[in-house]
Image (tube, rainbow over all chains, first blue to last red; front, side):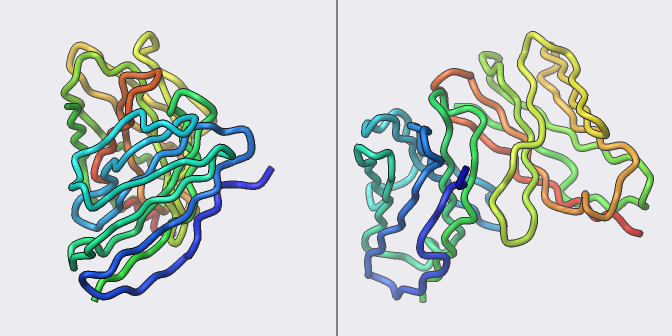
Length: 112
Length: 112
């Protein structure tokens, strides 16, 4: 069974640009969560989608948004990038409840 | 919201010794406590989890204990091996469809 796939693996952007990250969950998983990982803050919850609906949301500004498609694939978008948005963005899928998360390897975003 | 504190931030042990990582949580409604292991360049991987109706759970060299009254839970690794070297995260959740809140991580180094 294929794991969670995140693309791209690395991304370099400049301040003010926007970026879209993609996540393909494990087949059959309907819940997709997104986390931001930084050395000082650990894993910070961004949002969770289930059956194309945002079910939970973390404390991030509106520049961070996401969506989920009917095949459970998910994308997250960050607009007007800031230097502080540099981080590893992790996507995790789970069967239904959002527990027992299966993580992808992440997208390393660098904002210059 | 839930707040999870994790200690220590770094831990070095000799191969064969035991390692203990401790976490506290703030929300008494939390009832699901997973532990994740993150190796370099990879996303976190679930290694063990426990629910609030269980005080202890073991899986080979790994065990987790939970004290609901004190809102403490701990990860115990016995007979450590070099391949146990990684960053370990504790987490807490209200279960079901609630978001998972992570601790800030413990970098474990097992010295051969």
